[in-house]
Amino acid sequence: MKSNRGLLAGSGAMLVLALLEKEDMYGYQIIVEMGRRSSDVFQLQEGTLYPILHALEKDRCLESYRQMAPSGRERKYYHLTRRGKETLDGKRKEWESFRDGVDQVLEGGSNALAPS
Amino acid sequence: MQDRKETERWLDTATRGIRFGPDRRAVRAELEEHIEDRTEQLSSWLDPGSEELEAEALRGMGDAEELGRKLARLHRPWLGWLWYASRALVGILLLVCLLGVGSGIQKWQPGHVPGPSEAPAEREPESAKLGGYTFRIVEAMERNGTFRVVLRVSGLRFWEPADETGLVAHLRVELEDGTCIALENPAYSVEINRLYTSFPDTAARVAWGSDRGPDSIGEASMEIRAQERLFCRDIAIQLGESVLPGTGERIALVLDLPLGQIRLSARCGEEDAA
Image 1 (cartoon, chains in turn yellow, orange):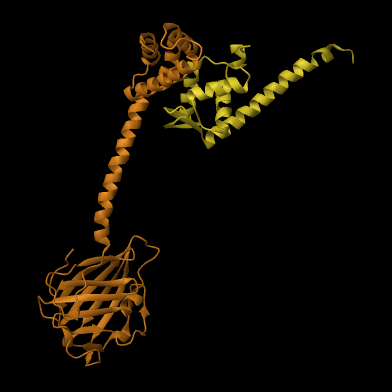
Image 2 (tube, one colour; image 1 turned 30 degrees about the vertical axis):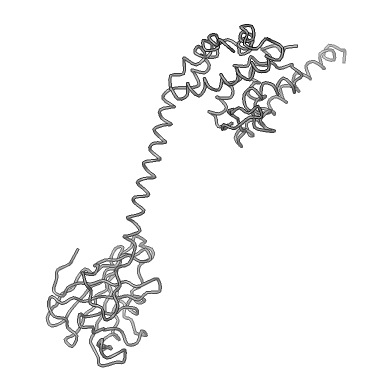
């Protein structure tokens, strides 16, 4: 099942930062890992990953370097900076607040109509 | 992939909005590498080199026009040129610093120190630096039968003026014939008024010639006064008749300090060399 693009809007940067928290990756590797970890819930149009990566690099949340990949070809790897880690932590808190709010609305819907 | 026309067209569309050349080439290379990886994965179930494979690879990359607009907004040309200019500026500054440091080290070396019996082959420096201070002879004149030489010690650290009492204790005057005039006993009394510091016990001190060794051979008159000025101290040394240098004769001021030796020279009778 592919996710609704509306739900994914704005969370692309957080997902990318979270993936790079564990290890440095290059673009195609990020796409594959994102699909694997989300059980294919998140499947980005692959080209749209690059504006996200480049914007994060411009904001100094990521830094890049070129290195030989396991495939034997040189690829551009991305590394999470300390600033990127702080940004990720901030976005995680925002997401948790958002998720808790949604959960409360979803769970509390019937209770709200129940007689007190 | 035998014919990559569609791939080349897709890449051209996605990157043509990036006007800064180096950025455009780098982004194009990165997208091309991604397409290469995606194509390799797809070739496990699609016919390698087929148009269908290429089409499927590009389909997964998304709309090239939309991607191109996003990339163009991110990669502004003036940022790229600014980055190149800053790199060039850093390189130039580094070169200037390297050249400047080289010349700076030379300036900070104290003046040439010849041996006691060695006549200077060339004129000795009239200023030298040591410990953050600059030492310079500003006067070397005969007046009314006495010879007066003034040593100026200056530094920007006005809160740490040169200690004239310490300097005087390490000071000696050398004449061309090898005669040295120095304080016999560094323990001297100091008179201080608001204009200058004087060292009255420096009158009638030891002098010796180069052929007679360090034992006292006589007495000489040496009066020393130190005057405080802004950012500097002037130490005026006045020699009496018995050791008066001749007009035009070279004299040397030597300071044997813990940090090193300062040796400055001037010609008797000259105006201020500055």
